[in-house]
Image (cartoon, rainbow, N blue to C red; front, side, top):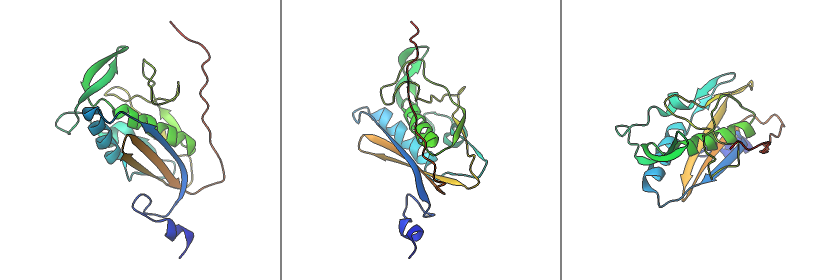
Length: 179
């Protein structure tokens, strides 16, 4: 059995090499938020981004509506926390964004929240809404596969593909504060 076949499992059906993983954590007592995170993660789990292809979070996850199973939870709107359908989905897009950058993918569209979020360092969040998307471009000559898993209080995104020997790091640095 080759090492690639050995690595095959339900999270990595092609037996590809792990390129990156990123995990964020959330409060399990916020039932609506937990459900929204689980739904969004399940919708992106198993996506393959083809060589030189682009991934759209909104096109993949779809509209965050009650009909689609999304629940009320806190969202950030106009610089304030308010209740809205789909609160928590941005934690999935943010986790995906960080894992993607660590795997060498390029963000062709991303938008930060108007307030700092607690689950990532400053400048590392990727807010999504009906007007704002997270789009990722695969600059590699090979496809990448993503696994999105929710576990007790956390969501982890892992990218698999062909390891080209590069290591990507993200550094968050505050250069100024605007009142």
